[in-house]
Length: 125
Image (cartoon, rainbow, N blue to C red; front, side, top):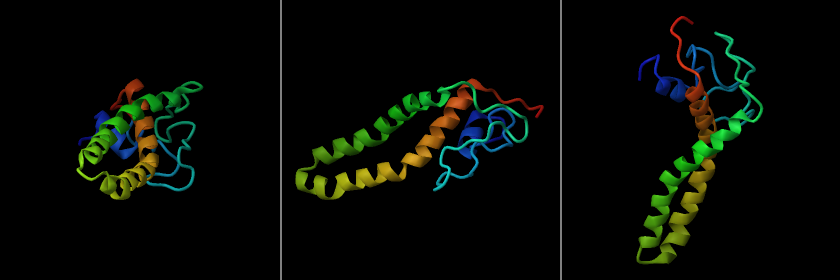
């Protein structure tokens, strides 16, 4: 994964234009405070992260197919087991715990994807 690609910006949660500034106030994938708080603009290139009111609600439409791709096969696997007792005592609680654990990284990931869909990398920053 090289700098200058959208994947670099998304995985590292960096500004899509300069790929130096952080997208979130608290960096990293797993955070416990200020989960979705973003600075007003990039600390390096001054790109405004507040594109328009309600811009990041579109991230819900990005996260929905991701959740389907991950959890539908797990649910199908569970119902294909010969004993549904095992599904509801072991697998289903595991799916619920996984969904809770991955919710915060998924929200941050989808915001990064959405911003990268609208802003291109500029090597002059």
